[in-house]
Image (cartoon, rainbow, N blue to C red; front, side):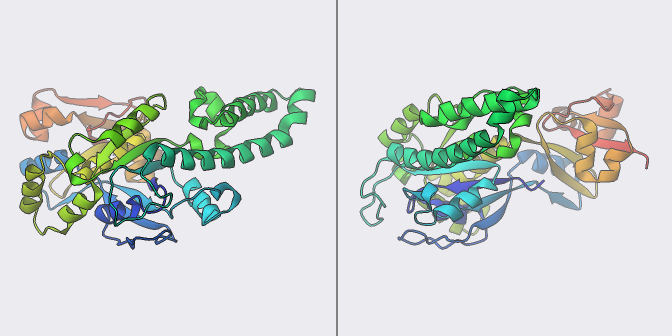
Length: 366
């Protein structure tokens, strides 16, 4: 399931430094705009302590974590919606992603030039918001022009419903609001899904701070929190330069010691990956056996046959049932056979909605 998060932001806010921490693919991190021209794609392992604990009990031949793709996209400047800078390329690249990780510079450093000459993360956020909103407004107005006559003069109920949604989008965008602030039900979302509006994508704001602010944040972070309080968006505080130092350490023990000395329980990179996974509405089910302990990605709310299809399409086509053990029960009783004896293995049918951390075994017949 190749779902992508795109890292975006103004030039020189720390996007590529952060990407380098996340991925073995090394994006160029330099003190000038547009050092990242083609989007760099990194396939990132999602940290999951449950795999380690299961492996301690089962001693499998291998452990296979799940992954998420992170894309480092070129920095955007004012006028991008009209093609300024690398605007058209930026907007095309971000349209292909499923969620946005918006990096905001919340640190001061005279050696790193800000494209607008001063540090103001709220202003920076608004610059990108406006450019994305302008592009979405262009998309919405174009669709309105195509469907308006059909919606207002014909008896096409679907065209009328789409037109009414488009008008809601236009009203929001004209007011400087993102498309995601227009609340639609499931059926309405289906009608306009093909619009692929940039400001409809889920977003997480990443406040890039210095090491001193890595634990508690700073005044810049507080300003961002206030600015986005009505957006239903996540905020994550990360010290990208510190994370880069951690990434250079050779052993897990050295990295943990570094974190402890910095007053951090978990690396910002680890928190970011987990949050990005959640942002995409992804969850994990597990398979556990002597050959492998493995994490599998599925969309939250999926039923058992769809999750079976994540492993192989034949599993979904010939689905009979799913045998399910809750992760906490497996840890408590120590093995699949012990869970069976304790009555902790459930047999579920086609309507079962899989839960995060379920240990699954699918029965099928093709």
